[in-house]
Length: 295
Image (tube, rainbow, N blue to C red; front, side, top):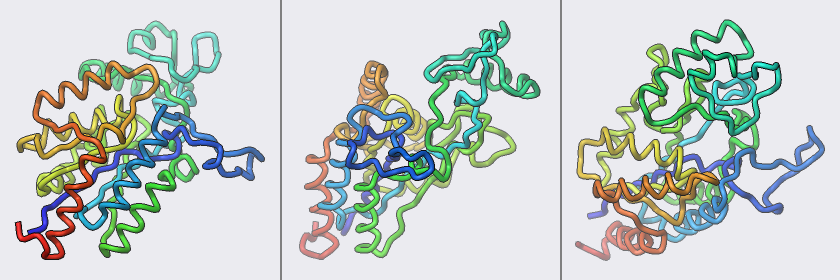
């Protein structure tokens, strides 16, 4: 009998990929080429390996899900939200804490947003997972950067046509008042926004799988946050989760956090594999579907 092998691809989007010049199309509005807003070193090669795995093993994949980081230009984690005490813009990669805001080192551009921002920062820091990082405007809804890497998109399109299936797309990050690294739940869920709350339906879908292969970007942030939440709420042995380590890379400067995440997950039973290790499993599963392997 064919096994339920589910591939979860986290944020395989242009803005996160260190794409070569040949992948950068012209932007007629700026009369320059598009460029990734937040490229992760190694991500382009990760996506090429992942696309190759999908293309070669597509008949063995039962389901594919893709998460899509999708932000507005105005977002609490973008420079557009903040201003420094001297009126200067806040540069990307600036960390902002609740104490900084209370000391008026940084303030929301819109004064009315101050109580909401402080409430968010207090809750974020109490959770202890992250502190607010101001990222470059990225994965803005409707932009080239929000699109999926071309090779991955072509590969999953071929899977859809061959399997007569649909790749599930999970959009996250469109609530501008909370960070949403994890595809399963925002860092500080909004009681009035179900899209920021725990996605129990998707976790139940993963629970039905015999194996869940996980790839995407970035290993230090969105992959890490998503897998940690899945591990916390899956309610099953974590050995069914497989991190494809040669299809994941960390944000520059965050390699130690990524390695610590891998070690922590492995200690809890999550498997660490590479694409070449997974391909035989997919091919064997495809054979089961054809009836050539009765096991």
